[in-house]
Image (cartoon, rainbow, N blue to C red; front, side, top):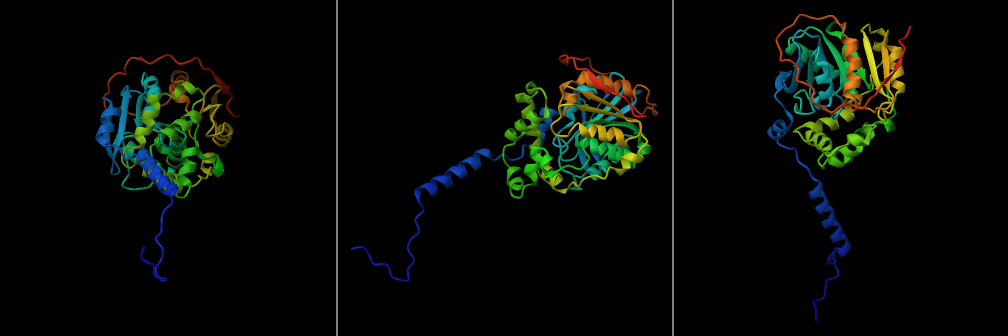
Length: 353
């Protein structure tokens, strides 16, 4: 006979088979989805090129590229959140035919990685831009910013107008938004628990979904592009920076825009699903003398979807920009070997009175 259980003895707990199976399945999925950071040296070897250099800017080893003419007007290209300087390759090539073009991976992005300052707000990035310009021995630059980088660009121009020759905003952020209007990665990062765990999972699916929203042309969502965005997110420190940036950035006060007196060009994709085209008109109304050009068939990243057509508008805008003293000789621009853009014509919005 089996031994009797004493009355004060708790019965043995037996886990139902379906619970054990569920726990095993969850553990298996978690192990499959887990994606640690990739080695920095591996990503640098894959995504840096012969124009890349790493410059100490405020304690961070920033990835910078320079091309074009030493005697051309200096142009600084600032990418958006979760982007990299690779987004500007078409514009760097086109504008480099006449200008001296710099592009940079902001801290917490691309090959630059985490910032010892551990602050990823628009205001902090504006400080970074000023130190970068000083480090590059530049006096003034044409500042070009896209999306979050556009907010950095106009904040920099509004607070340091003596360092800015001209301002170019490309589908720029900065105006207050409703919480539900934020891009998918930002909404996920701001969700308690989800962001803290999700940053350690493979980012490819989120990247693919995000790029389908970003581009008006679905053909832009290629495996190579998805891979690049996803792998650069796994550069050491970048995912943690993305999480902190999404949770700490506060809406900017647009009042300084109305006091700004910097020649400004605004470029926008009419099919932008992340920053509404209505904001383009707000910028035009708030910035004195701002010129607006809308590209009807482009989305949130017009500089990637049609680099030649959009860069041509910028090149014409900066053609008469005053030239600061040249500092160092640079190689001539490479010949253009890219595929031709689809013919995209901007719908020109007249300048304000």
